[in-house]
Length: 182
Image 1 (spheres, one colour):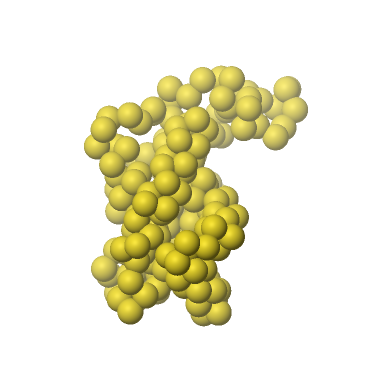
Image 2: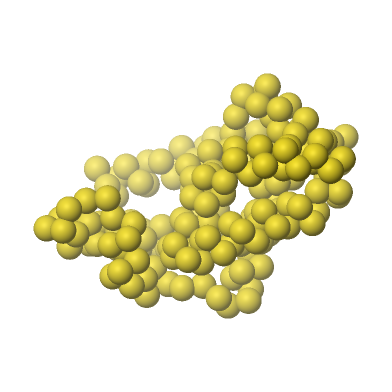
């Protein structure tokens, strides 16, 4: 994300801390789709992803008073909250395996016609299997960079790693994906 966008998020968070519900709504609007995509990619179930997304925004409201702009930017703080919420979900053992997703759920997500649904299901299973076969660190990088759209700097702050090492790791991850699906 661009620098001015990061400052905009910090400004909205500051206003939200002061009780501005309009700022909270703007944060929700700006972050919802990325958070939902992040969750959907982690759990592969629309219902569970919706629940976790809701939990993340509830935690945002509950924990906004802990955000300290002098210690870092809002987006890094927020994605740590999101990441921890997904981790908590796994700790509770509530995950549904990709292979357990019902055919109705696949049809609900599918934007293609009926005669293509079988091919679509096979492709989804291949992608899901490939993502699930990655090391947990690679899955996390995939989600933070490609799904949530975080910059290298933001990921570095969330994971406590250097930007350089992340650039190399994400480049390798891109190569793996290209080899698998090219």
